[in-house]
Length: 202
Image (cartoon, rainbow, N blue to C red; front, side, top):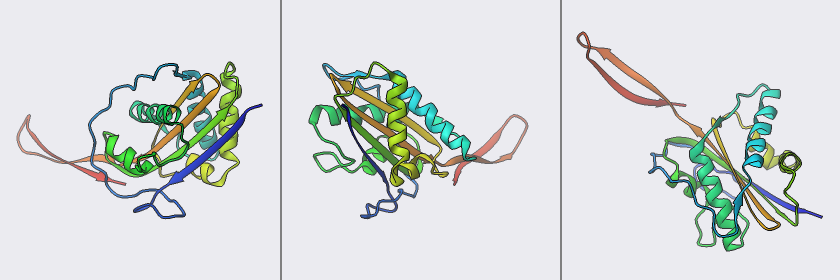
């Protein structure tokens, strides 16, 4: 029998105990390479894709905009799932004290105004049925107010999912960000030349 655990967090202007989303401009970080799975760890890509699709189905059914599939967030999600597997912990703060919002904003290569994270783990679950596993993960999150708030937050724009497994242990990370929209304040000077200023709006 599988035993699943899950945690959801959003953060606002620092890490309050009640946990709400971090808001404010975050400068871009360097791009990450795709994390190499540690020995014995494999990525459950079908489960990742299904969790992504199911999340957007839930959002569309409630009149919310679907989230953009973000390869950078997938890298972050996979890396954190790997870390939880290898170091044997489960939580949004790493054993060396790095909270999730600092981890995301220091590694995500785009400006953000809000970030959030859902995590889930399972002991002893046979992961040979991606559809069943993905449904279980999303159903568990939807039954929890904090996770549900992340899944259905209208302020998020992008999402990445990372599912790592080693033997019968599974760790799942779902990363969310609300990115700023870029716009150009441009003035045509002469034919063929243009001055543009890039700004950000929520």
